Length: 483
Image 1 (cartoon, rainbow, N blue to C red):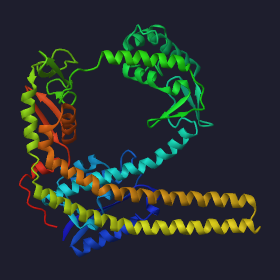
Image 2 (image 1 turned 45 degrees about the horizontal axis):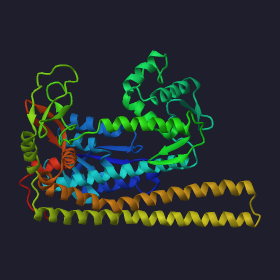
Image 3 (image 1 turned 180 degrees about the vertical axis):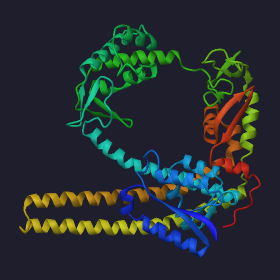
């Protein structure tokens, strides 16, 4: 028999109640191991919050695999049960283990085909998106607080959080410094750096002695309408309940000064690769310059002093190197269509699996609604008093909302899965054409999407491919996908 381990996970107590039970996962995995002659050496069972830092059982599993070279197989129910983020995927990939995704009827790892691993990469990205969707539920509560005029986060500079009544109050000491900053900058005679220096020279403090006020932070302070009694949240401005620190007139005057200074710094030329590379010698940023109005050169910004790699590199030279990087993504039209067909099959399997969860959640919603109606009828008939009815009604309504939120998450993730995977395949197929025809800003975004850890050493860029695109480069001889 072959050695293997089992990994099962639920990402929250709520998920455990919503159909991702550990018992169901382990039962399926044990049956799979028995049917395929695998000897289970260990079972790693985990209950964690979706984005909580660290996973004890996942880390324990990694240590076990490193200490047990004979075991190179992990049995797991589905992709989103194993990976919580892209780092998890990379970590397991480096261990060179085979992952059996039992419910997806798929095996990925060093012994799998490149096309199978590429499709698996898309599924990992989808699992990451699903986890991010879980976080959106917390954001809904914060949005509701903003709608009600409250501040749903840490109080900005000049204010403090009142933990007793969950409101924001003026911090007298910090508020004085905030008013001074707005008033002095509104004069229009000073840069952000100069204002900061004057701020400290006058004896003001920013938050604590261990934290420094930087120009970017000061710019955010000046731009925030929070200081005139507004709540800026997710691009929308709401009326706040907190006390303003400055007048709207002063705030608008500061905006005019900021806008004027921005106009003076507007770039006349966009550069394709500025901001995406670091110097391979000193680690500083690679900046770009336009010379004689038409020649673009890149060099080390020398942020840490003189750098031995401070040579100039022509844009055309970098174009050649990055074009070669893009050309290595070999996906023919025929293969792209085959991958999309396979993705559609995966999507259908995913939807079938989640459809059963949707039916179960709808049943739970209906059952709770029946209980709500029953307790209301008992209240109307005088069988229960008002206080008992209010407690029961509140508990049942909260339970119903939890089930509805879970239902919405499932529906949204189903809708996004195929579309996002389709976009990844299309990007891999069309990357070369996009590179050759794009404007500088578009080309920059393309390279940021495809490449990771770009450095420039002696005029030559070095980089790695982001997953799952790196799989296509390693498997440039990919055969047509066979479902």
